[in-house]
Amino acid sequence: MEGNGSEKRKFPRLMVEANVEYQILDEKKRKRKLAKDISSGGICIIVFENLPVDTELSLKIFLSDINYVMEVKGRVAWKSEYSLSSEGTVRYQLGIEFVDISDLDRKRLDNYIFTLLRK
Image (spheres, helix red, strand yellow):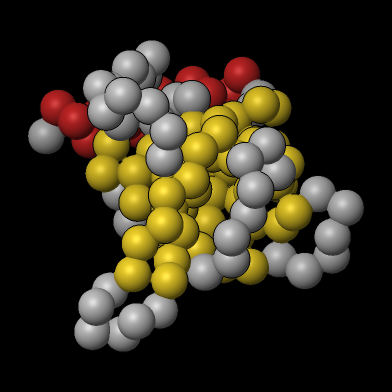
């Protein structure tokens, strides 16, 4: 991950374990992963493949708490690599910025985050 270590978020971020299906645009295979956190502006997922920054993705985000599925388009804004010493397997955290999200999905996501942050 690049930067000077300071957080400069535009939106409140909610730690969440939502299921996410993602597909690299122009490819057919969809993959399913867990989200680490989500905001109105994007989502962080953990994957095994090393996707370059600016990779465009189609995402289905399953918000099981409210029984809602969002379909959005995003781009990899940042990535960081890590491995669990016990496994030795490399994983990547991908920060995905939403680039195409409907007004309805943004409002539902805002309400979802606001409600859970207040608990």
